[in-house]
Amino acid sequence: MSSTLAFFVIVGFFGLLMVVSYLSSRKVTSETFFTGNRRSPWYLVAFGMIGATISGVTFISVPGEVGKSGWTYLQFLMGNFVGYYVIALVLIPLYFRLNMVSIYSYLDKRFGTNSYKTGSFFFLISQTIGASFRMYLVSGVLQVAFFNAIGIPFWLTVLFTIFMIWLYTFKAGIKTVVWTDSFQTLFILLSLGITLIIISKQFHFGPVDFVKVVYEHPYSKVFDWDWKSGTNFFKQFFAGLGIVIVMNGLDQNMMQKSLTCRSMKDAQKNLYWFSFAFILANFLFLSLGVMLYYYAEKTGIKIPTKSDDLFPTLALGYFGVAAGVMFLLGITSAAYSSADSALTALTTSFCIDFLKLDPTSPKSKRTRFMVHIAFSFIMFLVIILFRIINDDSVVKAVFTVAGYTYGPLLGLFAFGMFTKRMVKDKFVPIIGILSPVLCYIINVNSEVLLGGYKFGFELLLLNGLFTFLGLLMISKNKNQ
Image (cartoon, rainbow, N blue to C red; front, side, top):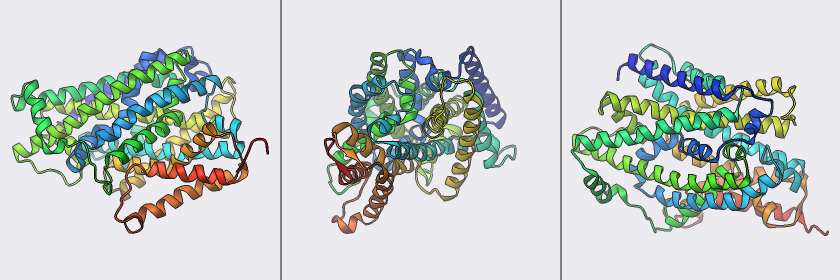
């Protein structure tokens, strides 16, 4: 695909985003940025969450990872599906009952200020790193597709992509994000569907042929029952269950969208429908992964060393102009649909949890504006650093970071909801730091200590357990 065409695609995409942003940001108040005035239609939120959850990581890394671990990722997604129902039935009623803007204010009500700050701090760290990793993907694609051709360095590409997010979210915040996410989800699904059709047509496959190739391919293996393996079914399932609870249910980014719904029942309905659509979309991405490797094998194309490069290489270099355009639209939409809401959530959490801003006060506008800029710059620095040190697929990097940073959140919320014990609040930050450190030590030495056992995504559950046990040690009965 030529750099000129890429330029017009990018300009057209951002032009449409600006139009959506303008239409959604009229007649806004100070509170709109944080809550969307709690008027979002549930079906719009559900559709937009598909794109926000898929992100650039799923779009590029999941198809590429099929060559390394087959369809074992589907085991993880099965746990995700159950996790969304837990969120809908347990967490959503809690958040609506307490009328929360930041979900971490629950920890303040339950334990105290130090616990509250600890939970919010771990969210800020995890979301900043995770969102930056996702933006790293789209910046790399834009660099290859267009910016290299005109001599613009990678750091300037990153600065441009983050500036565009800031530009269309700084005014109406989460209200704009709900609408832009839906717009971006549409492009993601179109890109996925059109790419599968293009590959099928090159081999003259009908629907039956397509299903047969995917089903019979050795990379379509789903279940792994080896207990030592990092992709063992039980490890993947329970890790998927735990991760979706913390990365969605205990995550200000994802929950802020659901809390913009008109009622608790609408928010629950949003999650029920979204969980089905999410599984279906990922099923298609795994199918795409098989077809990408099948195409490379049959045409003699050398498979890139880094699995994340497979989809971009084929889409931009071998599938034709239409596929290249749709890929560029899809990956840009995927990255922006998760990064824009992340930036809004980071601003919300810091303003509410640490600065104690009143979201209804017009005076809070300037402070919110400065915090929004600050987090944009922090994301820029993290992306540049990640480009220097990364040598693995981004999907693995994202979930590895989540295992260490979301574990304390899982332990804190679990202890608060499933026990009636009170903790010594001043010691909670120490527990929050020690738990991931202990997890790291065990993870690095697990094969020696545990007879060859390798941790996968279930490291998050271990981290949460350590946090829970640590809180138990510094707690007492409520009557005491």
